[in-house]
Length: 233
Image 1 (cartoon, rainbow, N blue to C red):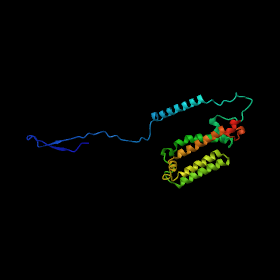
Image 2: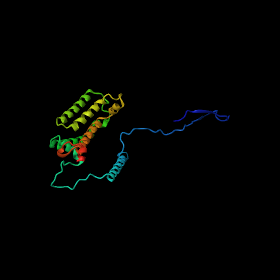
Image 3: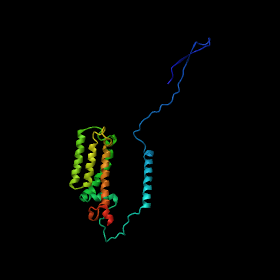
Image 4: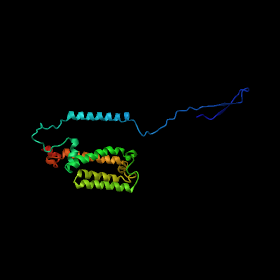
């Protein structure tokens, strides 16, 4: 942008008594700041995944060096161990077999989980990514309460308490987050959680709890056994 025009007086009697000089001030290029809605997978995501992969490999290597694997005796095809446990990543499903019929626990529920994982990323709620209670609605409150109560009654009818108890706790936390934007710090933290995060938290907590119970709290006949009793035996 040009500076204002400055009039300079001349002392030369022959010259024009006034001269016009155009002064340009030092101009610097303006930098526009804009928040990008999307970023490239590389390097923003890939570099972080590589770093996390290296940390996990280092951690597993240190654990393998300093701790021995709990190996059992040579397998005997005549004698079946009691209990016969699946690998740890299937123990959650094996724990569900303790509460539900095989078709429900082994086919229906895993199929619903896979379908949910495929469909949820395409839901509109993931694109908005706003807090669950950013908009106050009685319909949302009623729907949430009905879903929590329905799930609790459904799994409670089969005495599946590892699912009922986390469902009630997470449902209570979701209700406590309502009107929490001006409340205590922990309620403000809950208020900022989005609906997909609540659903994923519920799923991860239940899957981890079922796996932990199957690994450490199940003994002969799939009965409840405290971990120190197994180690003592």
